[in-house]
Image (tube, rainbow, N blue to C red):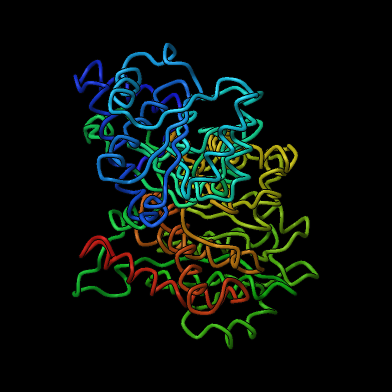
Length: 524
C-alpha cells in the first residue's frame, strides 16, 4: 500500500475531482459512509449509548456531518458540535452542514472559549466521540479555543474515532502540532499518511483503518509516490513462491564477513538469519583462530578461515585478495556484524564497501568504519544496502542522533542520496530509502526486537534475499517486514519481550509461511 504526505494526498484529491471528474461530494459521502461502517464494527455498543461528533471548519468537518447523518439514519443517538459558524462551511462541507441542519439533528456551536462548558457537558453525556476537527492539511500549531477542545476530548476518557487523522497531528512527521487528539481508532481516506505510521504518530492514531473513497486505482498507481507501507498484503505481492523442482544452487550462495574475538555470536546470528531466510548456501569468512568456534556452532554454513594479522581475532586489509577470490561464484555478501574495529580491519571494511564485486549488505562494525566517509560506498559498482541504527546513522551523516530521530524518513533519504545505496534505518517503524526515490515504512515488529543480535539476524536475512535474486530495495523491505513479523509471532507465542535473536531467526520460516498463505488465499 502506498504512503503519502499531506500535500501529496491533496494533489491526488484535486486530480480525482478536476481531471477524473469524480465530484467532491461523492468522495465526501464515501468517506463518511466508510468511516461509519468502520466505527460500528469496533464501537457499536458505545454508539448505541450516544455519539458526539465534533466538526471543525473544513472538509474534515464535512466528513463528520456525513457520519452524523448515517448514524442518525440507522437510529443511533447522535449530537453534533460545530466549532465554526454556518457561514464558514462552504462547498461540499456546506452542503452536508445544511443537510444535517434540515434533518433536525441535535446541533450545538462552540465558537468561543466561554462555550467550552457546553462541550464538556456533551462529552459527559456521550459514550463515543468522533474527531472531525482538522484534516491532513493542517500545518500550523493548534492554539486557543481549538487546543482547549482537543484537550477536553483527550481528558474525557471516552474512546475517540479520528476522521482521516487525529486533529493536531502532523500528517508528514507524526508529531503533534502543539496538541493532538489521542484516538482509539483512525479511519483515514484512500491512503495512509506518513505521519500515521511513524513514531510518535502511531501512538496518537490507535488502530489505523483505510477507507475506500472510490479514488481510482489507476490514479494511485500512476500518481502516488513510490512510498510503501510494509504490511502483510505488500509482502504477499513480492514474496516469490518456490517451484518444487529446485535445488540449493537455485537460491544463491551468500558470503558472510563477520565476527572477531568476543563477537563470534554476531557472525553466528548473521548466518542463522541467512539460512532461515532461505539462502541456498552460506559461507562465513572468518579469522583462522576463530574457525573452531564456528565449525561447532554452525552445522549448515561453511567456513573459510583466513589468517589474521591483528591481535583481536579480526581480519585486516591484507585479507582483501583472499576475500575477493572467495566472492567468485557467490551471489551476495554481508559485511560487518562483529567484524572488529582495529584500524587495519576498518581499512578492510572501507575497501570491501567500495570494491567487493558483489551486492553487499553493510551493518554494525562495517558501518562504523564508514563514519563520515560514505564516498567509499559511492565508489561501488555493485548494489549496496546499509542497515544502521540511529546512532550509526548519526555517525554516517555526521549529525546528532536527535536530528536523525526528528525525521527518520528524511534522514534515510539523505543517506541514500549521499551513498547511492539502499538505506535501512532501524528502530520502531523501520524506514527504508533507495537512491532512486523509493521509500517504505515498516508496520511489523515490536519492542522485543530491542535486544542484542536482532540486527545481525536482519543483516543475514536481507543478504539471503539478495542472494536469491531479489532487487536490493525489495530485498531490504521484505527482509525488514519478515524480521518484524517473526518477532510479532514470538510476542504472541512467548510474551511481549524476552525472546532471543536466535529465536527470531528460527521463526523466519513461519513468517514466510504466513505471507505465502496471505498470497494464496488473501485476507489471512
